[in-house]
Image (cartoon, rainbow, N blue to C red; front, side, top):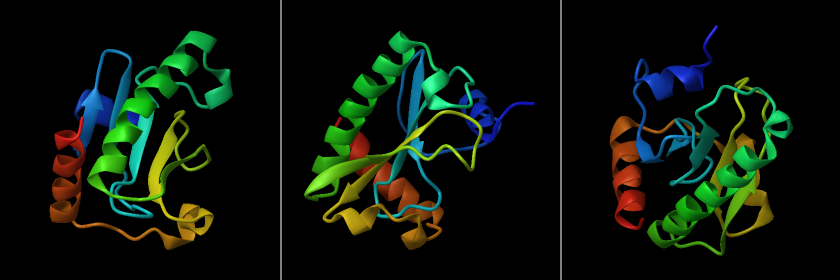
Length: 129
């Protein structure tokens, strides 16, 4: 059965896409910890990030680096934090979150964003790619 993220890749479920190539996709999280919170995924459906082939995992990190730089320009912060939890959706993914302290990486802070807020955040990041 396809995951939620596979349905986003195929276009069955809409998403605010930031960057995409033939192997990876970056899109905004619907429940951002901070504005600009982005998910980066491989298009290949793999549940656990450490089950990914080495080259695919390396490529994911290089792709995420490009997106993280754009997030940092779009949403001024001390750093763009990266987190891998991998529990809620059985599809490998990393969270890129603009942070000013380690406490900013808490999912307890996440709030559902409006479509307007997501659209504005996505445009802001894409402008900085």
